[in-house]
Image (tube, rainbow, N blue to C red; front, top):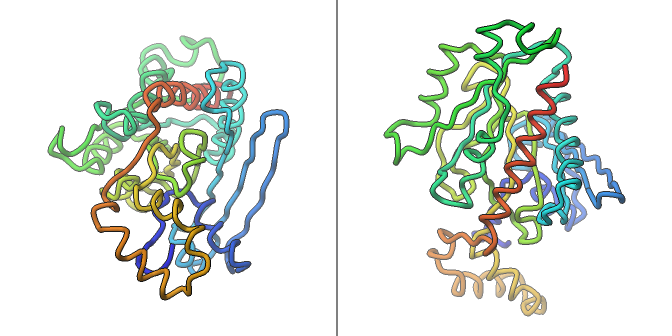
Length: 302
């Protein structure tokens, strides 16, 4: 999008695409792609290694893993199990789960709003083990090595009157986990990625960023422990849809003419409107189970 018509996306893979379109190489950013034909799964690894790369990509330095699978919207349990296994593998690598760890999993979002309910729904399917290990020890779990998993659904400020950061900091101070996993709904640049893309990153997450309701970011710098962010894009902003719908009609215009036309067409109100698929309720419920299974597999294979 041109000039003031900034594309709204939480996905690092989409941030890098706008530069690929212009054949621009980004210094300090490395990109590696893999495609698994059997699953029709494309995995993109984006590593932002320098401050320059972070400024250009408009993302914090760190690792971003994007799993794109069009069939994620299909209710096939065997297929979703395969995706869960892949997610578990990435989590084990990012969290360095070779040794026992206590991990706090936080489900961000508002369970009363379906496109924003991903985080709370994931928590509902997790295998929680901290209380059992505390009560009975590892023997009570029947394992020699056990990761302690605890969870939290902090809600949103309108429900609690507190910043998500305040709630999580208090829990961390009392329970002292080694790492945190934060799950949240995201916004995508492309409609084709809605509900069929999972992003995993070691840079943390910003609650509410998907709908431009920015709260304090959850990261290692702000919380003092490693933070893994897991997100699925469930919305795209209306301005992007309008732009894409007419873009091919404007190819013959000069850039300045195109920008002027878009300024008149895309009113400020469109940037505050977000669109989600009509079957988002079933899809989010299904994806929440896929993500929770990925976390369960990662945490229960020491």
